[in-house]
Each structure stands twice: as structure tokens, then as C-alpha cells.
Length: 376
Image (cartoon, rainbow, N blue to C red):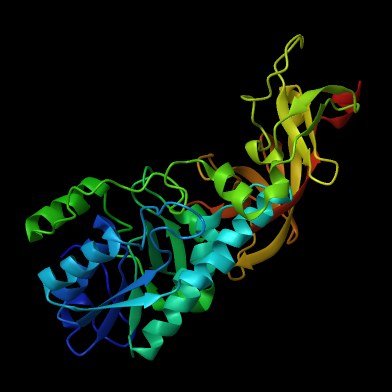
């Protein structure tokens, strides 16, 4: 049988009668298949959907997760497979803890990752409370990541078998207590197999498109969201070089992030210019050549460690689409073996030992590897 719902104290997925599994259902194909697989085990399965925002909400259009049609899709799947389904209104909590933080981070000149904040708070912390209140033995989600048991008997988090679907970067903040309770049945499957299962069962979401954008920014225009909540972040200002010379004007720092090249719109430079730093207090955009983006280390805040007593070499991933690179972690900062480019405060640095996720933290500041070279 596809999926793994093994529960400590039981003999495995084939003997789950009498168990209770809560499944986080967003209305997409992934969580719908998880619910169907859970129901197949014989366990009592309960689908839970968190309504995170409403049509016509203050932030603008709705996105592709946990609202409107998605809730209806989740309910239809629950009806199809014969499980209970509950919807809980967490709109205000989502707005205050995720959307407001998103706007604040951009206003402060950082590049946020709202999906991690959502997993940290609303999706895991609040869902955990709901699942436990419902007396569940575990909480299952449709994330593409694997859970394994180490030699010490502790649950570990590993990258998904399908590299193209791996979501481990977004789950680095998962705590050990959460990991003990969570199950990720899709971590060992390729996405086409998940859609096949959905079609075999006759789920209406089998061909539903995947979400491509931040759920509350469906059109990709995140600047519009930030401008609405933090209008001061859209104020224009100077574009300056590394020596502070004014090169031009920008239309608001919310349009830029470290490493960006497009949109600077300054001619006459002998080499391409990139965003090196943002100064929100002075409303300045600092630009320079690509070599100015080289970073040797990054100091981290709010570090989450699920690596136990692991000591050894690590690789670090500093953007969701970046490849992990060799590095050293001293408990407070990550030091790259070779200069890394485009490292932005507000993003996460996620640490790995091979396929295992050790933890990570939020990038507070970076150490330039090319400062002397650039100044020269």
C-alpha cells in the first residue's frame, strides 16, 4: 500500500483499526490523496481544513489554499472517501501572524518566506492543538518530505525521494515534538503517482493544478499587498553605488531583493549592476557588480535544531531553489566553504547532513567575501 502511517505502539499501517488520524486538507490533490490513503488503513480518519482568508478580504484576491473553492473541494473529497471533515476559521490568526509579518519584513528591507511562517504557526502549531483535541494518534499532511527513525529511535526529517517536489526547505522549523507526531505519506512518491492514485479513487481534484504562487498573492504582485498594509514601504528613494554615489532613483524598495538585476534601470555602467543591500531607514537601494554579492558567512536568528547530537560536515541551502552547498555551522552562523551569492536577510539557511535535515535559522545579516576587492 502507498503511504506510511506507522504509529508508535502499533504494528504498522496494516493494523491501524482503532487508531485515529487527522489529515490537514487544503483542497489540493496532495492532501486529498493523503486523506484517502489514511482511510484505507482502517483508521478513523478526520479531515481538517483551516480557512485562512475570505473572498474580498483586506489583502485583496484570494489565493489557491484554504479558501472558497478549496474548502469545497476538500469537503467533496471527504464525502467521496467517507470521512468526517471540519473547517476551522483561522483568518484573523493567518492575517496577523503571516500576512502582517510578510509586509513587515519587506518594509524592513528583508525578503520573507511566508510559507515557513505559516508552517511554523497556523499550519503546525494550531493544527497540532486541533488534532490533539480530537484525540488523534498522529497528524498527516501532503508535504513532500520523508520522516525516518534513526538508530537512536528519534524521528528524523529527510528530503523527499522526488527532488523536484522536495519541500524540506520550508519545513526546517519543524520541532522534534512536532516531528514525533507528524506523518508525511507522500515523501517517497513522485507526483505523477499521487495523481494516479487520485484518479484511481475517482477524486475530482486528480487533475487540479498545483499552486504556483504565495497563496495570498495569486497574481504574483506581492508589492501590491505590502503597499496596502505598509504604504511607507513604497516610498521612492535613491539608488547608490557601494561608495554612496547617487546613480538614480527607485520607485520603492518593495520592488527589490538582494541579488536582483532586473528593474534597476540605470544605464552607462561598465558592468551589470545587482541589488547588494537595502537600506529602509534611508530608503536607499545599494547596487554593485556581481562580485559584491559574494558572501562568506551568514548569522542566523531563531535557530531550530532537530539534528540531535550530530557533529560533522553540513551542506546549507539559502534559497528554496538553490542547491545545498558545503558549509560549516558553529551554532550561531553558517560559514560557506566557497563564496555564496544572492544571500538575503529574511530568507532561511537550512542545514543538511546528506538527505537529513538538521535544522536551520533565519538569516539576520551576511558577511561579505568580496568587500576588500570591491572597495579596491
